[in-house]
Image (spheres, rainbow, N blue to C red):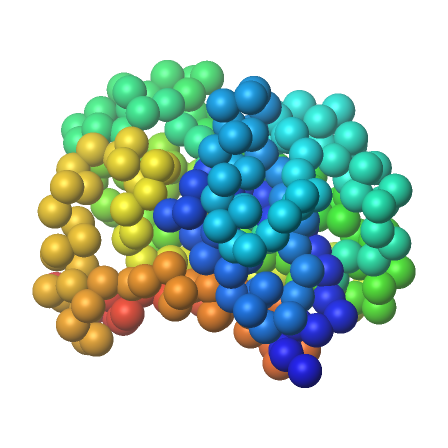
Length: 261
């Protein structure tokens, strides 16, 4: 039996097979778990996500459209999930958004109000919105694990990360407050702070062209993080091995966050 045998949950955020969410799903499936998925609205986005999910060896996957900026879309996804499954053991929140026009070195102070608020809405508030809807299913399951994806730019300044760093800081703080209130139902909420990985999202950040190489140079492990590193940590957080872990931000960055200079 695998660590995730008998467990089922929702993965939100697979854009393609380079996404951290994809690597998380891959590891969970390899350990015996069952994953269902959402995709961004639109036929192109559905095809892209479906292709990535099918690369995990799944045929005819449970896949539903989700615009996380709309409460009615979130309601619909969780209602459809409840119609298909009576339990939820894990929820992976791996989505974020910020207008790339303001993810450029030297442009943080020019960030307009709407760009600032929309980054926090999609990148942080949606964790709370999804967690609230997952809570009844997880409580019915005897508890569960909610996890979100963050980055060290939430804690230290990364030039060009700008308003996304602010949003990730809000995300981590949201996870801690959720952990306090959801713990009564044996629901754990944690953040994974993954190292730099070249994805669709990270490519929007200005000044990242050399980040992978710089991370490998500074890392105590002398390498950059791999998607499987985060995937395996997610299995730990989703499994019973982490039964006593909640409200934490776990760094999976090959040690880059420990280096001061």
